[in-house]
Image 1 (cartoon, rainbow, N blue to C red):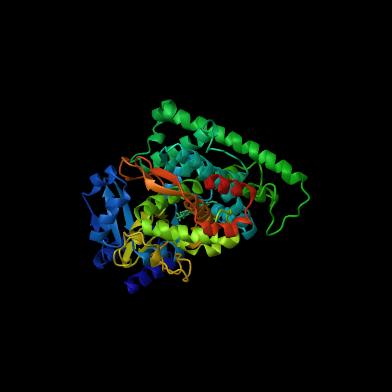
Image 2 (spheres, helix red, strand yellow):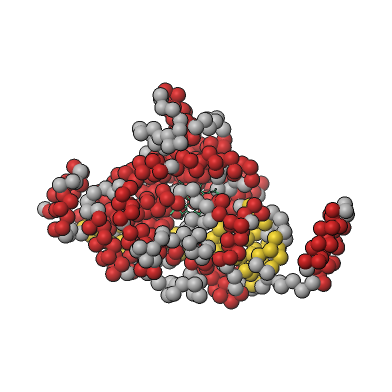
Length: 519
Ligand code: HEM
């Protein structure tokens, strides 16, 4: 086939029109024995009924690291092979766009960083990544602590009243509060307040998730578009959020104009360390739709993902009491009742492994979406442009050949003194934050957020599945949700006496906690 492609190349240089070359290459191609991508057929009915990445796992075990799935006129390539994932995401990333994902998310993210491709993506990535610098992330850690403390107070009340709690929605509110402060210095206060803007955010999120699992784009059907009450509600929610964003941008712009601070690499306004503030100070255009799109993108990207990570981490911990005990021991000795700092992030090694392992078993999102922009080769298989591709992180992370006891929640599989696992040191068999140029910009932020929340919560409470709670099953939108919530019984921990050592350095609010607990 080397000869044929040289021949076609040569002819093209001689000016043979591409239509002719196409015909010629099809004709030659047909005579070459290219390996053909395995096709999975007839399994489609299963896919609509449950979280769709589960049947994809079974098909992967049957058909291997690349296979084609056909639904009527539509077909998808499902990739579960680390080397091919690396090729698409990193080595030849220029040849792939976000495809369907960009189409689905357009209504809410516009050309924000997640759906954007090409030049827009390149320019915005360069503007946004510097905003998440070391000093910013350090400042965020104390904010994570304050937000988690509010959740603790809520759980305190539930524990006193012996009421079960639905943790999934509480985690969603915790991470919404955090991302609002972090991205545009807005306090949703969704842990206590449930109206207006908070409801609007959830309306939009649910719509994005409905669209991502809908077999047909109902939102493009003309009559539907104009008369559907659901779409009307979505549009007014979007209007409310956009209005709020406009206000926040205006307020922030005034602050930036009044401040003396010179813009530099680690620029940060102490009163408002938000990403928005950084972007405006760096010269971002306040009136641009692009800025709003990027803010909305980060709001969504940073909210549901971390909430899902916390949900599944607590689910897993409830199933493995020995892991929970070890985790609590570490937190007791490293942290006690202090609110964590950046130094603690290095010391909370086992806590970090718990999060690493939770991200392996429940990757958020469980699949990455791409579309080929040109002909390419996936392993031994040639593919055409315009192929829609799902990279199943779920399959990569649960491959029985790669992972011992692949389905077991075993943080010990990651040695405490080893490197923090990532896509590079695990050769793309572990990629919770993606990889290559489109890798998550919030990976550090999100890891610390999860570590702070888990550490503070397990220090103060024990968590068990509530008696009589429905079994926890999975369903998908963009991230993995439970079907009926994560209902838990939360009880206050009796703290070990070792903590008095730390007591002298406690802050006021935590010493109140200590006294209350001692009663
Ligand atoms: C992209 C995961 C939290 C902002 C991604 C991607 C993954 C991911 C897998 C790659 C998507 C792809 O290649 O198609 C996660 C997980 C999180 C998390 C598991 C929480 C545990 C956050 C947070 C932020 C954020 C907190 C914002 C501060 C973004 C952005 C992108 C992205 C902007 C797009 C980057 C680009 O295309 O250049 N995330 N993320 N993420 N994430 Fe996150």
